[in-house]
Every structure is written in C-alpha cells, then in structure tokens.
Image 1 (cartoon, rainbow, N blue to C red):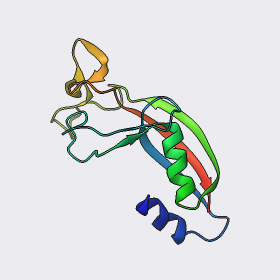
Image 2: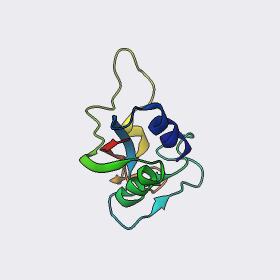
Image 3: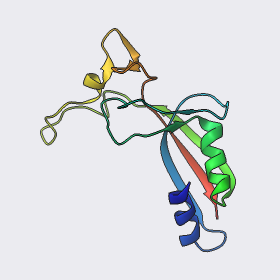
Image 4: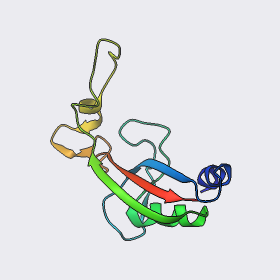
Length: 117
C-alpha cells in the first residue's frame, strides 16, 4: 500500500492512475503469499484477489476505482524471442496442468484498475 500511497500523493487532486497488477481471480478479499517463488519469480511476495486490490487502492487514498480488464497471461505474449532466450511462461507452468504454476499456485492473471486521486 505504501507504493500506491506514494503514487496517489504524486498526482494532482482528481488525477487518474492506471494500475496493472497480478491478481488471483475472486472477490473474497484474499491475498496469496507464495512460500518461496511464484512462477519461478523471486520478487512476488503477495498477489491480491480483486477485492483486496481494490481495498489497497482505497487505503492509498484513491476513489472511483474500477477494474477494467482481467486477462490470463498467455504463452503467446510471454515467450522466447530472438532477444530473450531464457525461460518463458511455458517453463513456469505445471506441464500437467497449465492452470497452475510449477509451484502449484494459480497461473498468472493480471488486472487493470483505473482510479482517481
């Protein structure tokens, strides 16, 4: 919430922000706390569901919050290219169940929120 508060405070009153974040599907005000890694990423410490993300934005001072998109991350957008030859999404998902990460968590989903300062 601290980072969201800093973003809020950097905007003029009435300013708008677009926030894209990993989320868990659902609206139970839950947050996933990966034990060690999430989809082999060491820098993911928690992933909110939609209600928790909205609550974080409210706590940071935002209003008029709207979730305008929820999208599964696909292998088409997260893939090896001539510039990136390391692992890609296909390596981060369970080969037996692509709806889960290799760690057993729900596969990556991202949401886009609009909010007003």
